[in-house]
Image 1 (tube, rainbow, N blue to C red):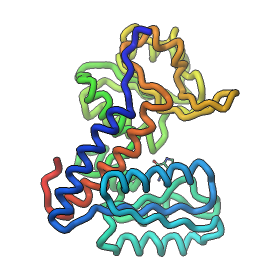
Image 2 (image 1 turned 180 degrees about the vertical axis):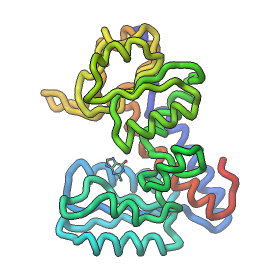
Image 3 (image 1 turned 30 degrees about the vertical axis):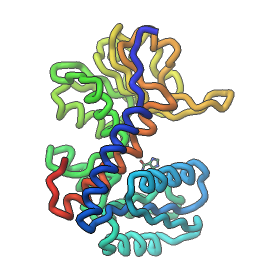
Image 4 (image 1 turned 90 degrees about the horizontal axis):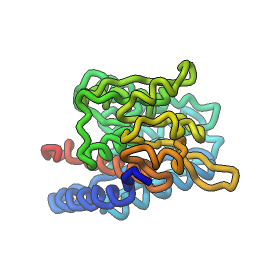
Length: 287
Ligand code: GUN
C-alpha cells in the first residue's frame, strides 16, 4: 500500500466534538438546535440511516424529532407534516428520508421544506445558491468530501478533478464545490466514452456511481487522491465502494476506505448544517 488513508471516522469524531462545543455554547444562550427526521415506509436501509442521524443528534447535544409513518401516508399528509415542521420554532433542520414511496412526488416534498431549514441542501433554492456561490446549505455527502480534502491540506487550485456520476445529491453538487475551489472539473457519467482516458489525467477522482469496481488501478494516475462515495455490497454481502480499493491503494497518494470513509462524514455534515441553521437564527456568526 502506497496510499495514505483518509479516515472518515477519525475526522468525524473531531468535527462532531467541535459541533458539540458549539451546541453547548448555543444552549447556554437558551437555544437548542433541533433536527426533524421524517421517514415514510419501512425500507430497512433508511431505518438504519435515520437511527444513525438521531443518534448523532443525541451525541452532539442537539434536539431531534423522529417521525415514522406507514408507506400508505398520502402526499398531502406528508406535505402537512413538513409544513408543521417549517412552523415549529424548536426545529432548525428538516430531513425527509429518501427514497419515498412511489405515490409521493419527492421533488414536491423537498420544495415544501423551508430553504432556511433545508439541511439536506436538496431544495432548488439551495442548489441555486451553490451554483451562484451564495450562502446556503450544501448537500452533506459532497460537503463531507470537501472537508476530507481540506483535512489533508490538499490545494485544489489548478488541479484536475474528475467526478464520476452526475446525481443531484452527489455528482453535480460535488463538481460545483470543486469548481468553487478553483479546480478544473470534468464530470463523467454513463454516457462517457473511455472513462479511463479522463481518470488517468485526474489529480483527484471522486467516484459516485453506486457500482462496484468503477475505478481500478490501471485508471488512476500515481499519487492521485481517490474519494469513494459508493456504498455497495459484494457477493459475500460485505460493504464496499465504487473503487477497487485493493488495487487502487497501491497507486493512489490518498484514498478513502469503505466503510469508514465518506459514510460517517455525511451525517457529520448534517449536524454541521443543522447547527449552522440554529446559529443563523440566533444571529451567531458562522464559525
Ligand atoms: N437517502 C440516502 N441518503 C440520503 C440523504 O443524504 N438525505 C436524505 N434525505 N435521504 C437520503
